[in-house]
Length: 282
Image (cartoon, rainbow, N blue to C red):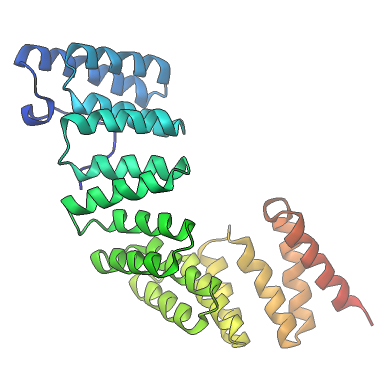
């Protein structure tokens, strides 16, 4: 799939169309806009990209890069409009449909996003990120089986793409398929054993199956790899409590409250404090 990074390169004639002189001038103006975009001077960058489009209305790359800039600003509908304009002049590029679907999904326009992803996959069925995003769209509609299938297709296309494993494993956890979730997370760890979220997911699956000692080990591994995983830190203390190990439970729960209360939010912090209080009770 073609890159969606900002383009500061010579673009092929087949992509741009139009006469040679207009094309070159449009490219020069477009590249100026891209450079301004890299400096986060968005208003000036958009102005230059619009000028590039006026000079050569078939310059798909200028519309594409405008979409990138709007996407960076989280202006989802503007980004979608720009990508749609790019598609008018480059309708066999799956990357454009992928980017269009991505911003439509962010904008909660799930049906439109699904159509865009499906068009991308018709052009190239092996695009793992498109399968992944389509899975997200289907999961948002609670179409669990269809989402499961798309996450698996993403993994099949790229066995080292961890986000698909994480989403699939959590999908199983949310629907109480704990053994299946554990297997997915184990496969994720085989693909990349340095991912904290994979170890956290495996630990949650083990905890739900009452494999508490193994769960503690995996939660600790998750925190070691990614200290920002505050839920894993909480669950170390919680799982020690389930094991009846009051000393370690209090130590880890207190650590959670001290270190992560501001990130974790009031509900989880209250749960930790309630557990500490219960552990202190005679």
